[in-house]
Length: 383
Image (cartoon, rainbow, N blue to C red):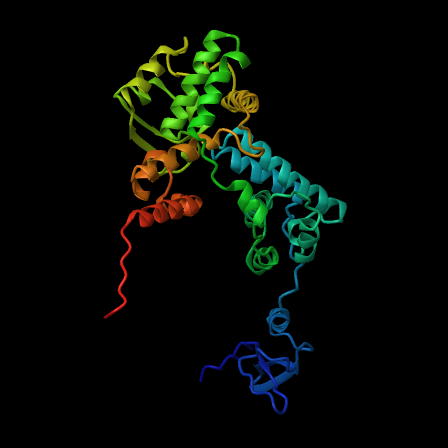
């Protein structure tokens, strides 16, 4: 007869539940043991731990011993440092085609986080704890809740690139939602220009800008933004082909990184007099209407923002914290006054209907109240 070879022992983990323990599957805190068959006999030996995960790891070592395999010293992979993780994050962001102003803001925010972590002895992403993130957030002194929200959002995005599993979940859970204060809502509330304010602004242009070409271009920008609601960034980079059909049609600059070409699409008709004015202020650039293309678009936008801020102060209609976005508010306000739907307004300014409904909720409510006041009031008191 062929001699039967002894069966290979297989180490398994089990728990010896204490009296009163109703847990099964090893999820309790009861002692863990090993069980295997050796030379035809059942062997049980303690794992010397109450953790199921640690018992599983020790079972691997015990299995190696029974198999006669030497316990090799596993070479641990080199751990990524925090500095390397930050560099990888920005390399990835640069490849996404973000603007230089956005990248500059991200470098500042993530750089400040990196400095804080280093000063507290954290040099690896795996060593970041929920408490240290909470301590870091407590150092923020910005009065704007919106700024704090954006910063926290960017930090969470960074953590998703270098932290994993339960560790990442714990870190994200520690950064609870930041709510905006009443001052935040007041500061970001729509502030449309009145007809009187727009008239004063146009009248002050020649005084603030003695150069006739600069003055004509400034007035054209006022007319264009107030009539179309186009953001300053898109106005500065407005191309000739965007108006050549007599309609305004382009995709917003802030939406260029989205793969869906319909996201951020602006479509609306232009008044003939506005179209004629835009053609009279064309500069020497063969592509753009307002931008000469000699510097970065972010720098050009900053220059125009500064110019409008000075003009608004001269006209007595400057509100701290907001400048050219008020032209967008002006267009939306007049569109609702003329009976435009939320969907039509959203298509005209390149926003989602939900964004328009949320940001201009008070404005919409006011228009609805005005319509209700114009309706006849009925009453009935019986006989």
